[in-house]
Amino acid sequence: MQADRRLAIMQPYFFPYLGYFQLMAEVDTFVIYDDVNFINRGWINRNQINLNGSAHLFTVPLKQASQNRLICDIELADDATWRGKIVKTIHQAYARSPQFERVFPLVEQIVQHSASNLGDYLRHSLMAVRDHLGLATQLVDTSRRYENKELKAQTRIIDICRRERATTYINAIGGLELYNRNDFEQHGIQLRFLRPALPRYVQAGKEFLAGLSIIDVLMCNDAATVTDMLKGGTLS
Image (cartoon, rainbow, N blue to C red; front, side, top):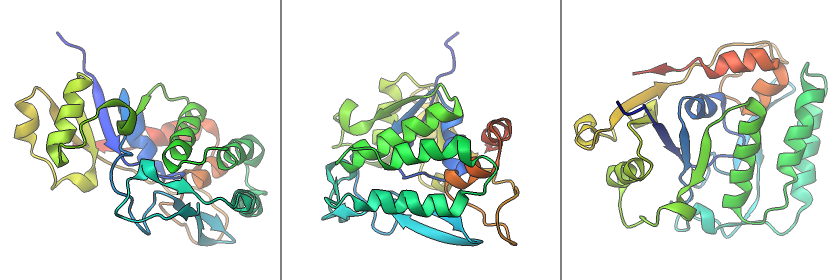
């Protein structure tokens, strides 16, 4: 009997929220979907942290980014001072957090990474957080592996699953209306969806801010608690 091989596919985001890593934790192979169009004002190059009790947006500046260009073809802004500014803001936001001494070096190393290409920069950040979380999930990116950009939507997803010999494809719950279970089953692939769990935890500030960057989760919770959080999603 063939062993279950689980696969997920997501666009790369910068320090994404807990649910992104709950999906990564559920699979053997996590495919970074980086040869698709960039999304303006999305989460590819920006995210939110808790700054003085309010959600604060931080952004990686880019050169000539548009929705007509692929993520993997976009370059970071030439002016490198933005890296130091982001590091300073995160330091200001979390210097008094219980896990600051353990987590801040990771965050600083990721932000200061020298890559000039957006795809490379994001891949490095996701791999660094994956390693910090102790996940064994393999990360691969579509721009370097499959050469199947001519395929669209569900057809391309199934093709990637077949190439990786996946028996189960797990998608974020937001894609529930995009895919057909029968089409996957015809190729011997089970289609499942993960609904993330975003538990409350002690944050700075009076009101809990849900869905912030993984930075907030890591700064506020010890390693064992974060490991438990990674198991919190619900599969259907």
